[in-house]
Image (cartoon, rainbow, N blue to C red; front, side, top):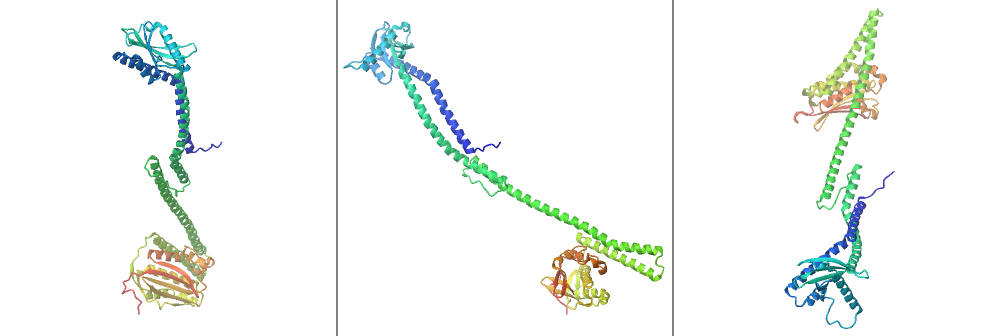
Length: 508
């Protein structure tokens, strides 16, 4: 069962309301159960104070006792009377001189006062009081009207006593009025507390609600929300600022974690690519070696078995074995060279290379192949000197020229050129032909990639020549590429010009 959501604002307001209600309820309960006792205690205290005050005044001046009692009664609700030990009333605040006319209420009050005094006088247990001693008693009249009385010794030598009394009805009425007023005041206070509690709960819980929203957004990895707060530096504001710092830290950490994950994913992808390349490399090498090994094994077994009795047949068998062994040796040497270049283990020796002389030597080495296919090679515009490793550059040129001879149609044209642009020198080999599809141009630099696998053995290539060129370009801090041009395709190789400005020039 889903629990109903209850906001902190409602909880805070309810807590304040309950506290106010409990507080007012405690006041009402205290008033109901303890106010009358407390009020009786204060009335007794007033009677004792009246007795003490009258005793002091009476001791200093006893000439006008009636005026003294009347003056004290006018300041309080206490009735006072002076009686003797034989029960005679000397004076009483109820006996006022100059009373004129008949006032039933006033006469009833006097009657009740005399009835109280008579009841006290008839109770003779107070005559044994000593000096400055007093005693409390409760007097009940016939109509159940009760009075709280104090009787104390006023003048022990003359046997005079002071009687101070007040009606219980006055006490009970005062207690009832106090209870009613307390209920009214409590209700008003409760309403005020509820209003103040609502305002305080809004003010107090607003930043907490904002921080709760901030935490929810953070849980959804949304760190755009910030705690604004009041900026007064209290604990809640400090908590909000801490959430802001936590949000910024989490955003930074998660960002760094995402970057690390992306980098790790790239590394894993690169590792998988390298593993695939390694597996493909092993497959390709195995495929390249399988044919020459099979041929060598077959012709060797034929020679062993004496199949070729004729000298020409034996020479054919031996030439085939030698050619295939040479092909295997060439493949292995290229693979070793490629591995050293890719691992950075190949040492380079920079020297001044005359590109025209380099091209002439390459053309000389391939002259027989060109003559067999009726190809013409031009290199007269290669009069540039560059400082680099001559052996590696010769491998590049021989790979380019060999590919051009291999794939140029018979009777067509090959051109070798060199140009200097800014701080770089570009060596280009162009051959006439159909060119290559644009989507295959980036792939020809991969190991063992061939555009026409059916003609591989017939063309005589190993499939790693252009991969070797790319590795040499990385080693010499250069670049390589191929592009289809009008009438054929052009392979280029670019190197940084390391010669001084006066030496790096086109020769005459």
